[in-house]
Length: 100
Image 1 (tube, rainbow, N blue to C red):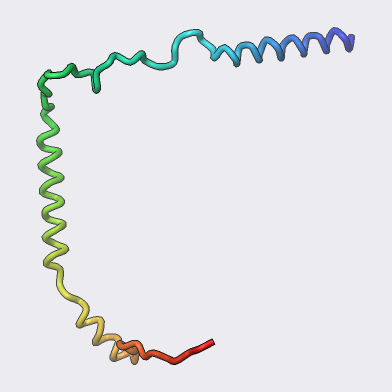
Image 2 (image 1 turned 90 degrees about the horizontal axis):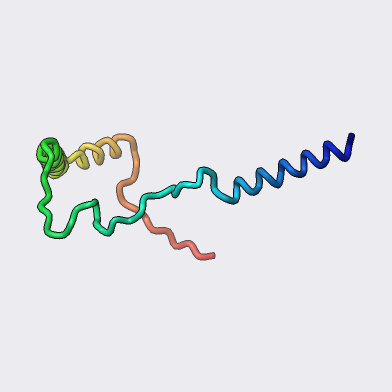
């Protein structure tokens, strides 16, 4: 009984290992290279899709507005300095002569 069960288990593991080593279904798991980048032949004109112009224009306008907003943002440094003086914080660094 024990020998028969042991033989079944050992043959199952061999069969399972051989299936794993083959890689499964027998088909190739990747597409064969066709030789052209993005499946476009040399000299073939690129046709834009309708959403690409809107997408690129929207991002361009958004980056321009963000750049203008950062360039013209109000200078809050003076207000921060005033608040620090009121709280008693030091604005200048005082060097100490520390030697170990």
